[in-house]
Amino acid sequence: MLAALVGVGVATAAIYPLSDLAPVVSLSVVYLPAVLFMSAVWGLLLGLITSLLSAAAFNFFHLPPVGQFTIADPRNWVALAAFTTVAAVASWMAEIARTRTLEAQRRRAEADLAAALARELLAGADTSHALAAAAHRLAAALGLGSVAIEAGATDGDGRRRALALRDADRDQIATLLVGRELPDETVRRLSAQVVPSLEALVAVALRRDAAAAEAVETAALRRSDEVKTALLRAVSHDLRSPLTTIVAAGHALSSQSLPAEDRVELSSAVVTEGERLASLVDKLLDLSKLQAGSAPPRREWLSIEEVVLAALESLHGVTLADARAAGPEPARAVGPEPPVRLNLAPGLPDVRADAAQLERAFANLIENAIRYAGEKPVSINAMVVSGRLVVSVIDQGPGIAITDLERIFEPFYRGRRADAHTEDRWTGSGLGLAIAKGFIEGNGGTISAQSLPGQGTSFVISLPIESRTQAPAVR
Image 1 (cartoon, rainbow, N blue to C red):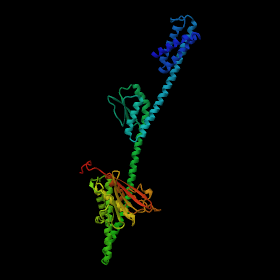
Image 2 (cartoon, rainbow, N blue to C red):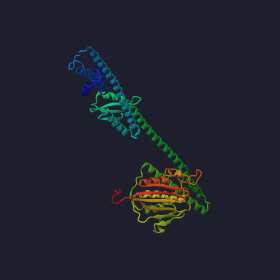
Image 3 (tube, one colour):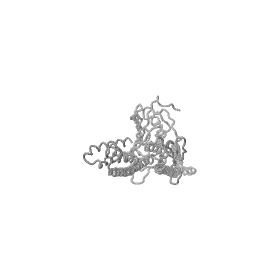
Image 4 (tube, rainbow, N blue to C red):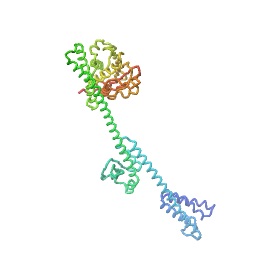
């Protein structure tokens, strides 16, 4: 109303200087900008009020007799009536333009809101967090004080009103909760314009979660089938081979005519294949514990040199006495062919880990290196690098194919020789590296493999160095 009065006043004052240029009767159009402005901004009602105020002001201040709401010349009645009619029509047309503009702005705002909700609900990985973010976005866009979106059916309470979100089958999948203080018109607008798009987006997000969960389950089942298949292959080959040798040697040993030398050779074969079978069973048990999460480390302070020497002692043909007999120098060669060269930096700090698990891990790595080194020596280096104890097991064998480096730590996976042009696979169970990785990572370390074709392979183990004063007590 204040704007209408100001507009009419400005137009009335503007007619005075213009009356010297044109007849006063024709100057009523000066009021039309104020009428159009009021209709476009505040609606038809205020536009009509401005039209009537303009007609009254034009009559009172400019049509003779001035200062009275009467008209001396009857022709001025026609002019005033024409002005009032034109002003009313202009107000109505401005109202139509205003309504369409507001409708376009509202639809654009709804489209922007739908796009924002789609980004929140469909781009996020966790739908529960996405629902909270979408509710916050909805409250900010509509100027609402409190909005929540909860999965499933939720009842309203004294503070909140519940709007059901349903899927295509009309089953309730979520609930939109808004404040009880909202006007009914706002609630109807939400139900008619926001809820339908929100229902579709939430349904898509929930279907996406179901599809993702199904994909994860399918991948897990596929992986489980692969592991079972690989296990069956290992059992059918790696377990059958030593058993066949043991059974055959046992039958041969029952012969009374067997020479003593052959009897000793067969007995040695039984022992060797039995140890091989026991080693494979131990690896299968270690792997099953790692995959079941039932092998928590029992950490204690230990010397990495003692762990490496114990691992060498556990290997066939390499004893702890051999290692110690090689001398106390940091760099020395131990064991039979191929020799194992130890290069342990002096003054290495103790680490806090499970001695048995690290010993098994290093034994698997060293055994793997000896198997493929041929007659070339295997090197074990240890030093402190960037606050961590780094141990590397290096062989000079044919190396590992680049395509296999990322998979060599998978259970039952047997890579190809880097220099092989066929599907020539390494012998072995394919368990040693997987177990080594599991035990090392279980003790807070990391392991990686580096290989160059024809130049050997290096396994690098990095273990954390803790302070004895800060480390928690060992149970």
